[in-house]
Image (cartoon, rainbow, N blue to C red; front, side, top):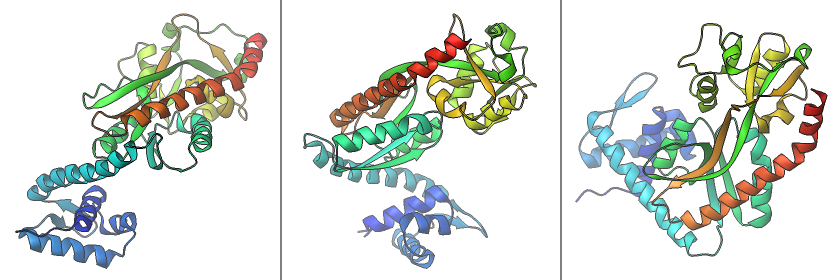
Length: 311
């Protein structure tokens, strides 16, 4: 009978994910030699190699690929045993691993975390900010409990709960204040600044402009902050979500305008695995996220009304 330890499986999964002994050792909070020894013992127990070792990187063998799929399922099932115990309590306590996309995290997270901490003093919140495809993968692998993303994600294995919708606004140079707001046909003729590929917000903005692919004049940015600063420098115009306006435009020489119908918008929601034992607790947390968004919107409403009056 093969004798595998849970620790070895954890270390294997980390190395398979990072494809680098040093990074995997850091993630597991152990030394690199200790990790190497555990992986070697695991391979000896299995009687076959799991990794191809290179000078700077390691790669899964064919057997390693198949083994990794089983290991991830095992680790996720073990994690869900702990979740099952937590689910027996009236409220969520302990660790909450929550993912958030970058066009939400800087603006909504402080309010969400403040509200969750106040309502659940025993909650240990771990935040992961990254793009939607990575969040979906980490949810599937059991490395996240839930994620806040733009809907729909259309993954059959995930529960989607829509929480609120928000409009996109046009950000243009300060000297354009008071000018007529361009429609989406006019936007296609302008120098449009959008987030780099991989961001769902980029795809949503392109869809509003009825562009199937980015025009040559379009310039990419790594963050909404970069885009707004580029607009302030007179390089072009951009679209940003409503929740980002107060933060991103306060130190830039830009003007903000709302589109007339049709108004571009997105739906924000929470997702989690349908098999998660924490489903009822996560549904309660989704209501905290919804309330946090309403609080943020109410907080920024006076400034928004003043801005519209000014235009």
